[in-house]
Structures are given as C-alpha cells and as structure tokens.
Length: 463
Image (tube, rainbow, N blue to C red; front, side, top):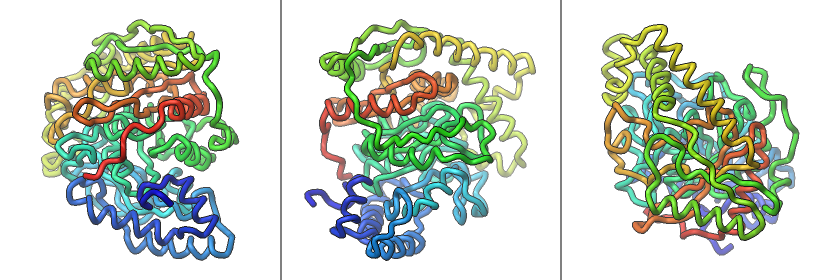
C-alpha cells in the first residue's frame, strides 16, 4: 500500500478489505484522525459521529473477516450534507434560524448508504438555505478550501467538497440546485456528478434539485450511483429505475463523439484566461483521441439569469417572511439583503420569472441538442476569498459565477465537474461535462475517459 489510508479511493479500500490487508476499523480511524488534524482550519463538518462510525466500522470488520460483506460500500467512510435528512442527526439547512432537533427518518440517499453499510462519519456544512455558491453560513461559520485556507470552497455543498479534498473519507453526498455539487468540485479539485432530475430519489423532491456523489475518482462516483439510483416511492418526481451497473460500464473510448465547446454562455462572469485555456486544452486532448470538437455559441442572456435569481429570491423571501422576527434576525445578513426585494414582487413578476426559467430550459436543450456532450468551465473563476458570500460580496449580484452550471438544473441534463488544470497560484480548475437528458452513464463514461487520458493533476493538498 503506497498511499496513506486517507488517500485511498472507495474501490481501493474495498479491494484491501477483500484481501484482508486493511480493515474498516483502520479506515474509520484514519478518516477521524484526518478530521482531528484539519477540522479546526477547514470547518467542513458540523456533526462528527465518532462513536456511531466506530460501531459501524467494528460491525463491518466482523462481516469482512467472515467473508460476508453486506452491501456495495460496506465499511467505506462517507459524509452526508447538512440538508440531506439523516436519522439521528440534525438538518438545519445551514442557517442559525433553523437549528433544532435531529431527524427521525432517513431521506432516500441516506437510507441507501445506510442499507449498504457505508460508515456514516457525520454531516457536512452548507450556507444558509443552500442559497449561496459559497462556504459562508450563519450557523456553521466559514468553510475553507484545503488547497488554500484563505479561499472559498464554493457551495452549497461546501463542507462536502472540502471533506473529499482533505481526505475525510473517499465518499460524500451533496445536493445541487444551481451548481452546488459541481462548483465545490471545481474549487476543491474533486469529481462530482449532478444526475438527471429524478435519477436519484430524494425527499422532499423539488424543482431542479438533485443529490449527487462527490468523490476523488469517477469510478467511486459510479459505485455510489449504483446504490443511490435504487427506487424510492417518496420521490414523486423519480424517473423509472434503470438497473444499469454504472461502475462496471464505465470504460469506452471517445472516437466519433461530437462534442460542443462552450466558453461563453452569454451571461454572467466570463472565464478568466487561465480557466479558458485549461478547458480548451481538455477539449484538444479529447480531439486528439478521436472526438470531434465544435464551438458552441452563447445561448443565454442576463435577463434569463435574472429570472432565475428572482425565482430564488421569491422562494427565499417566502420562507424568511414566515419566520418570527427573532428567527429572521439569525439568518445570514447577506441572504436577508439578497431576498428582501422579493417583498415587492407581484404575482405577474413571479409568473414572468417562471416563464423566463422555462425559456432558459428551452434554449439550453435546443443549443446542446446537436451534440453528444458539451464541455464548458464549471466556474469561470477559481476559488475566491473564503469570507465572501459571493465574489465581490454584492447581494445584488450573487449568481454571476454560476452561469455555466445553473441552466443545466433547469434543463434536467446530467452534468459533472472534473479537474482539468491548476491555476498559477495552485488552485484547481474544473471542467464541466454535460450530457443529454437521462444519459448519466454517458457523462460518467466521458469523464472516466478524460480522467484516464489526463492523468494525475497534482498531489492532494496538505492544509
């Protein structure tokens, strides 16, 4: 074993358990030790269940020693995002206004990983209500990037991104409604998949929201998809179950693929030169191995992104205004300032916002429909200052840096982020891979092909 235990992938851990060269107890102790060393600096966790995780690890160790593992990830450490209901743990959705009791039930993703006997280490941080692509929270404080603790993790799966990059275990569950697994993946140099809407059952289901795997390798994400996609009747937006074995179906070449290259989506922050060059280099690498790369023209505009902003403002204001005044005061001031304009929106304003979102969906599907896949930056910038709720910290412009990710939540297309380079100051750059609706396996396959062709980027950080 040439790697420290905390750097091993889920697949590597399972192989070592199988050969009895490592036990789940050792893996659990290594993950907890990593938290002990780094958590004061990173602040990625808001619940660490040491006793529960070690009890799970000892039970898993017994099963492996008997040659009777139970489940696809038996004994593999995992973290779960704050807002994913997990039995016995709180889910305050990142805000001091909602701190309260532990959940009595598991949401479908938490139930699946529990059924497959992953070691649930605890819950990761997120910003208030998940309404920031940032690691700033009124409840959890500031979550910091393991590559540079002065920089942001993005969000809203902020703690999950930091946890994977820092070696708090190889698996994490995040959620994504506008880029919330992909943006932390880009800023933290890991892999994340936003599945097609309904591919992974969730509860409660919501327009555009998905749960997705966050890992260091594509193969580990595919392994998680095998269990996360199992059906659950609680999700009334769930797609029909597809029994494909994602982990066993990854390998393919890229010959003959028609891929669009999107470097300007028409709205928001334009990619920096470093980001554009890294994404273009990834496209050239795939082209050198047989893919056809064609430029994709911008298809959005600022008005459509403002419609999305207004929809989320109205949603947040509705929740905020229903709270007693003393609880409202506990919400992050940035969030209060951002959503307050919605107090003056009319029913017609709300309808126009929703109509704009449907137009965004139509344009996105039409623009990408001629391609097997589309490549773009995940984020047009690298990680910004840790203390900022968004780049520039302006509540009037909170979503400028999510312009490449948010449209694909509305179009329901699967999209992944994978590292494609490092900036001059040592920060990861993310490549977004977008597929056609329902082609989650195709996105994983192209990501795996790129991962194999790309090779390692940089050693994992030691904050």
